[in-house]
Amino acid sequence: MTSDLPENLRRLDRLANLGLVSASVAHEIKNGLVAITTFIEVLLEKGDDREMAEVVGRELKRIDSLVTQMLRFAAPRPTAPASVNLHHLLDRSLRLLEHQMSGRRIALKREYRALPGTIHGDESQLQQAVMNLLLNAVEAMSDRGELTVVTEAGAGRLKIFVRDTGAGIAPENLPHVFEAFFTTKKNGTGLGLAICRRVVEEHHGTIEVHSESGTGSTFIISLPAE
Image (tube, rainbow, N blue to C red; front, side, top):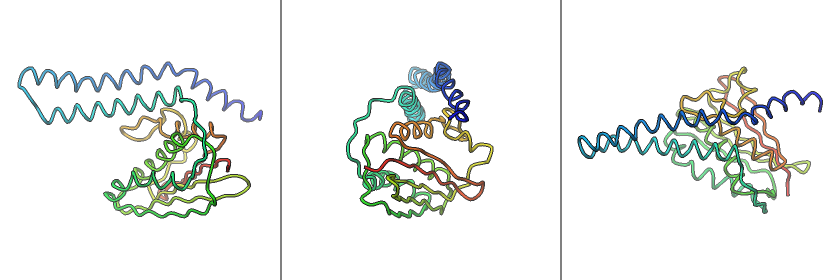
């Protein structure tokens, strides 16, 4: 436990300084409001402008997504634990991504080995964590990638493996992927994997990642079996 103390203190320090997040969010909101202000000016001067309306719509959605994720990270809602069928949850999440995978010609491979595959937890929160991993995997791949989702059971635990064939994660970035606001994406918030870790830890589980540049990544969630 002693060896973990410095890292735990660093994490607590980051969480204790969430006031810095306010500045980050305010900056994003300000950027979005520029488009809204411009749209209003256009309406006043020229009338309707469909292209600008679309820009405003996209900006509002981006702001809403950012604020929602930050609120989820800073103040997670109380859990509503129940029996959750992990495979049904995975299937529902994958169904939501069918269009994105089809557009990128990403092949899906499922290997559900965990039986009966049930855990005790908050289904909504667990689905959010799973969706974050799946979205990251899809976004990490270009055309003709392969997404593999595997479940395994053993020693009172259920494990979910999410593998992609993307570019992988640079070695220097691996230690930071679960940190809040760390991102290598151009328009990323750096909250998806941080939220994922929080949800998993709230369910007495663990999450880890294995990756090499150029060979893809594998995220592994381990949760107590019901």
